[in-house]
Length: 200
Image 1: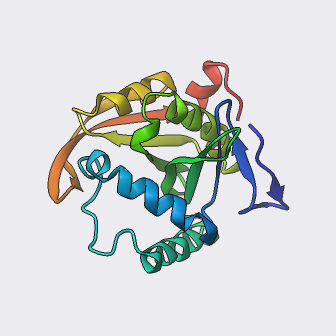
Image 2: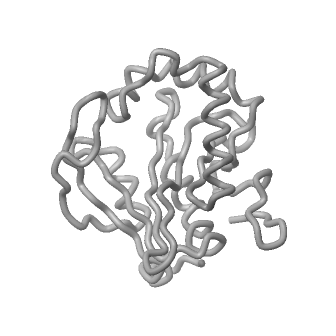
């Protein structure tokens, strides 16, 4: 994994590289590719995500997203990243590290989405594996948490392949597609990752 840093702060223009994909913070020029992929994947994505707004895919909504993402990076609260296929730099999905907690917790939540044309190619597993050293090394976190709908087999398999352990079920944990739903909770600790041969 390569992630360039500017002094002690995260370089917002840097990239995180995996074997199949690279990740970076979104930019204004990503709008068209993002909107097209999200529109194409709408039926696939809405069953796993919070309810979409009426203006979900508009350019103004995308600009609002970017401003929110920039605030979260500035305030050390989160990192939204787009996932691009190596070779042709095609946008294939997104990944977020959100709800960063410092102090005694040093934790964050990880979430992700994959565009429908790119499901099943190993891109998400590669993206999660690439971002783990960034979370534990660059950000200095101790724990990554993930919540997954019990019937979301592909997401559960990504978490299993990348070393996360299931810790239990949270009842009516998140409001997905307008309905409060139970979620399986998974976590990965820095020491788990290192014990599996990973670097921080």
